[in-house]
Amino acid sequence: MTDRISRRELFTGKILRTLRGKEGAEDRRSESLEAYFRSPLHSYPLLQEMPWDLLVAEAKSRGIPTEGRSKNEIARDLFLGTPGTT
Image 1 (tube, rainbow, N blue to C red):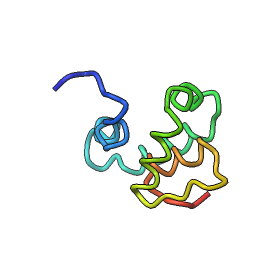
Image 2 (spheres, rainbow, N blue to C red):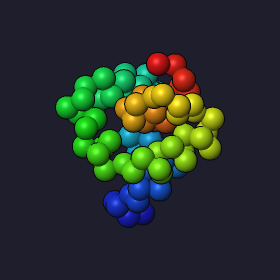
Image 3 (cartoon, one colour):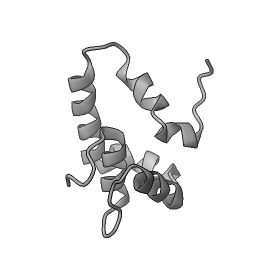
Image 4 (tube, rainbow, N blue to C red):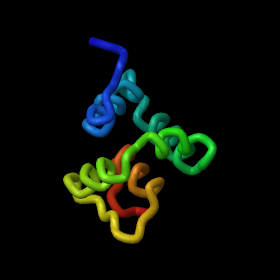
């Protein structure tokens, strides 16, 4: 397995499995990602590197609404798996 993750793999769950690590750490991971997306200072680099069209396409394929929502809100729903709960 390589250490590099492509942009496409970022949304297919590979990074989530990497972040998840051991079983039982789901709550801690969820809290950590929530805090990450609450802070513009932390989430800014990810959101700047993430192309809008790729973000919208992945959100639509997962049934996450995109109309009238910020990039941060959509990315948070993709990573946390909570469609439309902003």
